[in-house]
Length: 91
Ligand SMILES: [Zn+2]
Picture 1: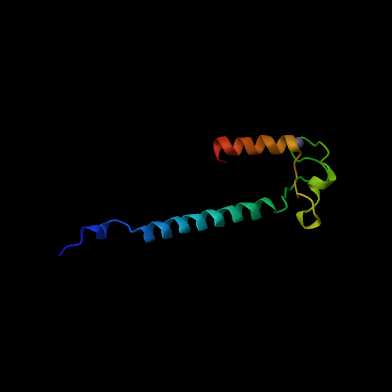
Picture 2: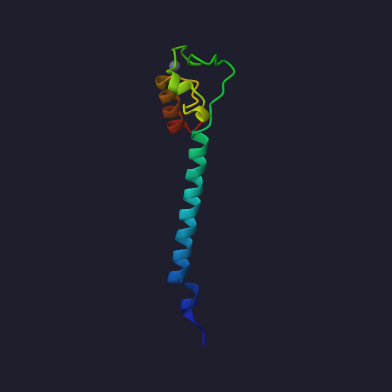
């Protein structure tokens, strides 16, 4: 006899699918976090000033991540502009 329920995903399969999705999401999140914690590099960065507007960057912000800083090469303003642009234009 043909079992018509065969084509429907069982509750187990649904559970498995959602846990795979959760794991993929967690992976992606971890990658984004790891990326965000890397020091930024820029050929024009002199170690003290924003590469875009030359404003002085606070010490904690430009200090390398490994030394407890944020490893940024831009001031807050320019960073915000770039992140907003990324959000809207995905570049
Ligand atoms: Zn700036």
